[in-house]
Image 1 (spheres, rainbow, N blue to C red):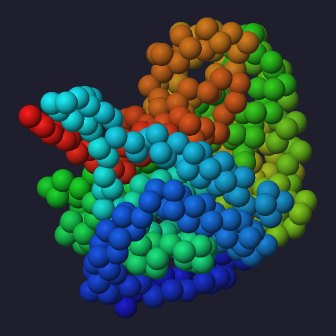
Image 2 (cartoon, rainbow, N blue to C red):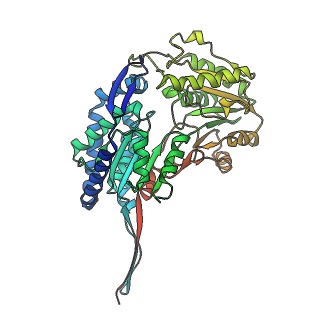
Image 3 (spheres, rainbow, N blue to C red):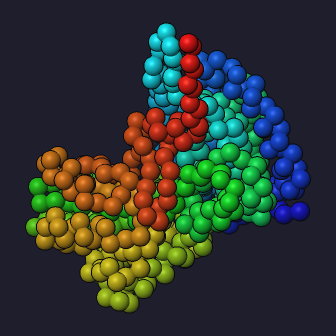
Length: 459
């Protein structure tokens, strides 16, 4: 039997340990989900919505327990209070639009014909959730999937095992049947075996590009639908007309919050040459105002990265860049909590080029490279010079210019004068190696349901 250990980044201890479910037990659990899905789907939509939102209420009531658990599991400081604001915003919006998004589209209603498009639940939806935002990313799919009438099987990341248990606890207390929403502890081999066996009707995965490829390989030939949100290397662009202070505050927070472990975090910044020097100076001051330390302490603004091996990747990128001519602006001595392992000091790099890994490969840590640019065209070229495409952030006072620049960017979302934000009314999607699929908005419901056409001739 495979044992999964959750190693806390706070002190390297084993914070939780769970046995992975054997393959046959996992197959049996998914079969129970399929058996239970029909009765859940048959409930009135209003009842499903009310039950799911009651689950969100229950989750919020667990905040005093969940917030320190998050710190122990993945290092986010307790001062930020967990993810409950975003969870509530996204769940409430998806509940609000459910009736309209799932409604029949009537093409004709006459004496002779009824013609319409109906939406039906996919069946059993498999959610493979990541550790960096273990509640926010999970509810993106869990909430609309349940509301739409699906059964949901959740496999949470080994780094955040307890998050899956808390979600199950909350929804079960609210009245979602235990077989309709299941949190399973699975190893990679069993996960892939279930997908290959067409155990699920839809698979949603948030994680690495390598993980996404593994999901696609497992699903190949099964015709199982997949939604994949994978890597990111999101850029910010500061135009000459930008509000400089707002751009520094927004982009540096986008680069460093959660120790840089954000799907849509800012990993590279391009600044018009007229503002470059001032931007860099203010950005350095901003970083020096952060406090790296124990995430259980209220004055800590940056905790450890979720695992020492993730920090090692960032350290290697920084070292390679400096060896190739980049200049590191933050003295590590200013952050004595940097222990060479999971605790990693934030860093700003200048004199960087796109020949350096730190400007092209995903870092997923507290480092950002800053480059000057001559104009919009040069910025667009750099922003597109990347294998990923999740979000792009443009800082300007000219919305028309932002829209024109956005039209030329290879990205899923264009943001103006903000970054690192997910609007539940808009489709969360990406291009290139960031993956494919649609989450949230009405399109999120479309991904979690299938269309059935009705052509009823009356006479």
